Image 1: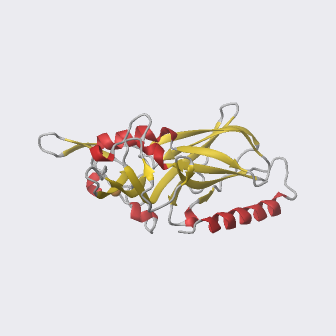
Image 2: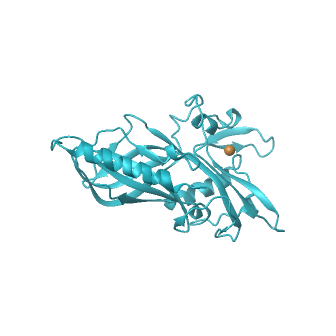
Image 3: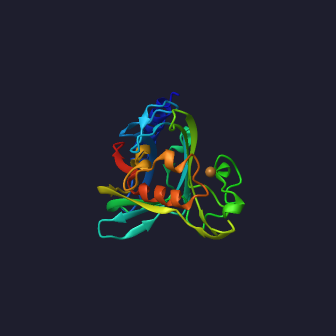
Length: 266
Ligand SMILES: [Cu+2]
């Protein structure tokens, strides 16, 4: 799969737009934030459909695709003031097969100044994560079954692993709303929201009047399977959607899956 070209095209287009827009800006003009999503394994660009990765539990695995939502991006001034950027597109969908989804140009106006971190919700919060929120694909394909509380998956990370006995088995590392089951009857007695906030220190960046600051947001797939919990696919199996213990483990491993790096476009 050739996925390098669109990155270049997007970056160059961004550069041209930025250059064009920078002329004649006022010191009180707002700035903008742009996020560009990339996917890694062990710090290197993730390669798809090749059984070359080994997770912390020692499971050889491959990744076929990753689809997920991030929402409610917030930037923090160096004095601690938070600005929630939800005036336009408050939920963004990323799909490793769809280059158009890799770039997230937030429409929000941001007050110029010095900022030192970015945070976002991994998934969608309880208030917003309701069925019918998305009517068109690809987002609508992320639906979470009505019986399991409806709404949408936070993430579908699909792949295969070599299980005990050297059998290749599919895994659906699917995160979303969990359920509590009555141990005797198997009836659902409650639901559990598993979305979480990701905080990314971004060492003092400046929002300049009339300019866009761009960050690469990296997801390192290996991190879903380690720290603090070693996620053994042989133990948990290929499905996690109805297993709150597995979802909780993945959620707790999510704290350091993402990192940011400023892109030098200016
Ligand atoms: Cu699923």
